Amino acid sequence: MTNNKLWWKNGIIYQIYPRSFQDTNGDGIGDLAGIVQHLDYLQELGIDGIWLSPIMPSPDVDFGYDVSDYHTIDPKFGNLQDFDRLINEAHKRDIHIIMDLVLNHTSDQHRWFQESRKSVTNPYHDWYLWRDPNPQGGLPNNWLSHFGGTAWEYDETLGKYYYHMFNKHQPDLNWRNPDVRSMMLDIFRYWLDKGVDGFRLDVFNNYYKDKDFRDNPTRKGFNIRKFDSFEHLYDTSQPEMIDVVKDIRAILDQYPERYVVGETFMADSAHARTYIGEDRLHAGFDYAYTHSNFSAKAFGKAIQYWDALHGEEAWPNYFFNNHDTERSSTRFAKGEDDSILKLLAAMHLTVRGTPYLYYGEEIGMRDISLTRSQIQDPVGRYYWPFYIGRDGCRSPMQWNAQENAGFTAGKPWLHVHKNYKVRNVANQSNSPASLLSFYKQLIQLRRQHPALNAGSIKLLEAPDKDLLVYERSAEGERILVVLNFGKSIKTYQLPTGEFNQWELIFVGNDAITSHMSENNLHLPAYGFGILISRSE
Ligand code: TEU
Ligand code: CA
Image (cartoon, rainbow, N blue to C red; front, side):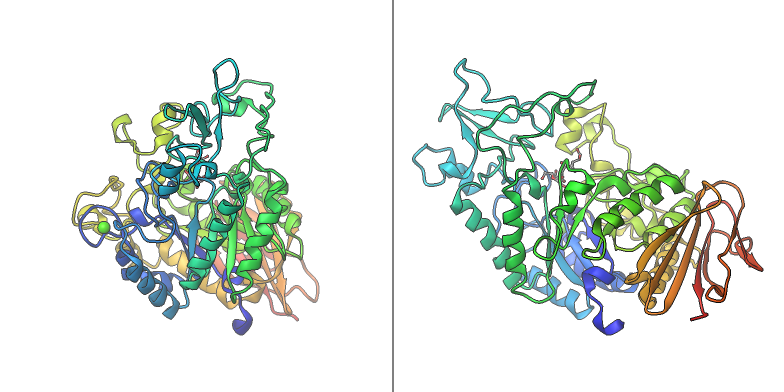
């Protein structure tokens, strides 16, 4: 098994938000050299790939998600040599590098947009979505920006509006222009030739909009965000996208073992699945599991549905956290207690699919709280206080108990969580009972067992609403996972019969009370057991 493992499929992917991982030059912003410094740590953790949030030049209106040059590295992170070094050093450790490509929109500081807005005859004019005011002099249509307000920004010089799904400093590209499309595809080749192993596509299903710019129909019901009062029929997910996905895949298939995962935007699970397949993306993100309630039933349902959508033909993936979402620790854990996080990790690392981890998840980093004036995220600034934005989950990585958690010798761009003196990598590395040690053991277990990293999954009926039970199997190996989402002790009767000689190989949360007696597995609050059948 070890020999035919496919890194992105049987392995684990770790997302780094480069601004917040490790600063090496004291400017308070993480950099590529900082990532290189911690590759040994990541190798020891047991990951197979790193997804880097954008590292291309950006004026940082949306912190890297507004790109002003697709062919180089932002000087605040380093340069192309540093990037080469990162790739080489990562590859030496069998770690793959996934780049974030933001191709739906650029920064308004990008040269293409600067040209585009000079005049209607400029060769780049048609690279963006320009529309005349409607005949009454108003907005071209009723489309809104996901980041708040209208999606149309008026340009005095041209007397026209340009379209932006996100911030007004993030104008959307016109993918219907063949030059744009071919430039975008070249960007894939450019980075593949530099040795990149894969891509994460930012809001890719948004590349195309209705060619006639029809108004979106309204949706009934009350919504805090006006954006949610519309059916987004015409400003997202147009059928043209399937062909582009196929083109992208064809390019990747010219290189060995490359991977592309897409972030579908405002799409349900079934729609997200349509972009995945042999001739499409390898994988896609879906929020059903991420946003699930804390219950055995809800997680079971999310897993079963996403898994069934993939079937045999595709391989699912799961994430609890990313740079846009309040951390699962903040959502689910009580105070600084990590027992619920251990339960969730046991599930996350044993389901069928690629688990994604987000930096700091392995030590249970919590979101920082921010006052109004500390907010940096444009989304938080717009919606505050209804929604405070995404800075909370982007605070500096907590390496040790030194000043600024060892993240920077300068002033960090965003403050460090006040729990850093206790909650940090150095402390947890030295404690066998820590969340970090727990992740490492579980990741090793997953690596050792084909049933866990490659097998099929079958959810079993559980006698109790708080229990989630599933079986993983591959190559004559069967593993049973039993998770207790409840606050009280639960007993689970193990399936019996000649093929069911269960041996407990991993227990969690309270090793003293999680145990077997005859065919019963006893689990304390949030306890769990992983069992292997030795009978075949
Ligand atoms: O995210 C898409 C997106 O808009 C949401 O995930 C959003 O951030 C969330 O609902 C909060 O409102 C991608 C990137 O992941 C995000 O960081 C960017 O800001 C956005 O696209 C624009 O590039
Ligand atoms: Ca720096």
